[in-house]
Length: 504
Image (cartoon, rainbow, N blue to C red; front, side, top):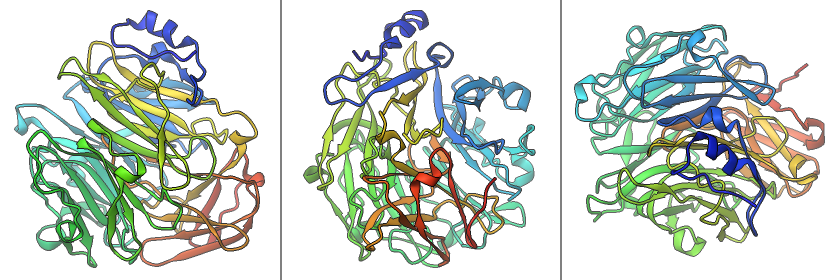
């Protein structure tokens, strides 16, 4: 019988409550991982990447205390090595962790921003450069990325101008957002039409090539009654087309607004769609493939009203259709409890919410990521819970049974040198008849204080050979024919612009 992690339990009783795992009727089976070690109050951000290039994903978590933990993944067991690696153990509150290899040395670096309430002047951002997987060195001032006064929310490493170098976008909850261009290893603020320095209260920032013209556009989920934005990238300058496309959500009051956003092709038509977690009714924008969107949350069964915070797409049952997890809470500030939503994609444009109020997965109310931390073919779930006296960050192992667990394909997209993961690249699978099976985007961040830099995951209805197409921003497209998913069980198919990367 599944048990819910409750706010009233201490760490010891918490471990007992989650010891029994399994699934209630209609629910998937998950088991909580390292409960006692992870049940530390005040966890805010969760970001996943393979910082030491050993082939599995590691986890960074930030706390209200200013601590940033780095959990090295040792064969599915997690060991905090943050202090010895040079990450802070105390200080001002850190949010918005985000991994990105800004210097192109093949080791992902880590960005974090502070969130001091009531003292905007105290806020700043930090960049910990990964020195060969051996230590982290804080270099924000040298790089030009201190961003003074920024109240951090989502952070995005992206290449908005397709010059091959990672740029940076800093969302700000209480001031103008800022775009920084990577210019010979130093970051320069981009002003004017190219800056997308939106002054609205931004929480979620999602970069995606919605119009498939080869560059990344920007959707902003804005809070406190502000309208949302969709900044179309016109070759380095940006135009907000949300009002023209009916995506601005005009007329909100101050108690409502967008919070997190998530990019995914939920209907397997090859076009990237967009879910927006909202204080109010959630939104699902179906990409029509012609530069427009249709808002279809009600038809899809996703228009839940309440306090949704973050969302992540992932095919947890490996049936070939993207499912959706939404972190959501109920109750007054200081007394809120997580009541989360897991929507199973039925494959016909509709979703079924499968969690009960007693679910084990009602354990986090902010950051959410789907990852396969143990490379067993099934997506696991990472959550953070920053409120209440209990809380913590939680990792749930997906107990999907065979043969479904192995019915998947993991694709690692890399740049020309085979080192850096290019955010925003798109991967499409096709069957032998040319029918599209699904689309995934290499993560650009987007949700709420959560991010991952790793391979994309495809669940497969059948383990049959597929064609893999990778579209890089800027127009480069790579096609690999007759990929046998069974040959990549337990490992990744790595792709560069030159084609399939041979691995030992």
